[in-house]
Image (tube, rainbow, N blue to C red; front, side):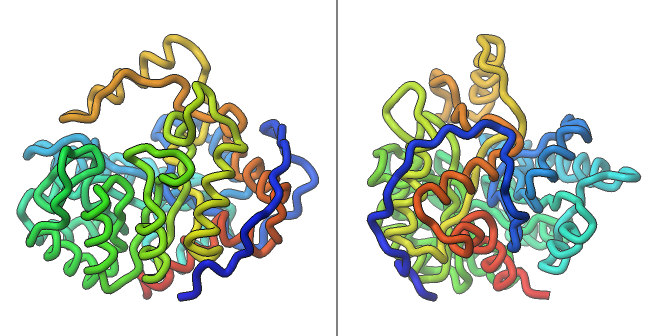
Length: 357
């Protein structure tokens, strides 16, 4: 795989785009959020707005990734069943994506593709056979660890990072056999490097940032980005305000700095958008801040901290955010083909290679 093929040193421009973008030609490639959130309670009017922005597919998290015990397995199965019922309702604008051809179908029919994903392999417990059941139920990718340690390896907030366990290696091997891309977004540095090294298929870091731009435990080092790209992987840059910069309210410019850096280090073929955010407008209120704090408190053990508000970037706090990002990339000098790779074609390429038909 080629990497680092994009020229560094692009000029930055001051941007101020609102949610309604005009004058944009329809994208030629697929527009995909490599990891975002589509909630069961989203009204069809909101889904319509997301679709009108050009979005074709979103990979969503199923289950509470903070659960480590035996309750994690039924929690995941319950969410799979709930989404299955929701997607199967008559006239639904959503469609479950199981194969590369499904991505073409959703674009042709004007639907929003939903890709099932787990942010923690803890629901497996020590039962490798559960991977096959998850794939049968539509799960297409799994992150090896969340923020803390599980039976596979260590998360990015652990005190130490010992890398993948023997069971972790077995899980990677079995996921390769099942054509399920391994994800390493929350993994500790050594665990992430092990995941890249031992996977025979390209892996993803589908929602993270760049440590060289802002030193945060959730962001990845240049060494990891280079190894990821060398093996054909893709990093999706997330849109979580406190993880992107030191200010109370970071901006679209700060976000694009992470995209630029990832492109310079990994190459234009290995960078995507992985928002890690809901595709709706989040109210900038005290009540909403408390709701977020309550949600984070449920992600224990060891992950709950006082929330830094807001989690969202103001310029991207709307369902047409991909248009805003596209405008921002244009302002920084990216060519149309390069923008389309970042907005979806890079993760589309990886999924085609991994899933096969």
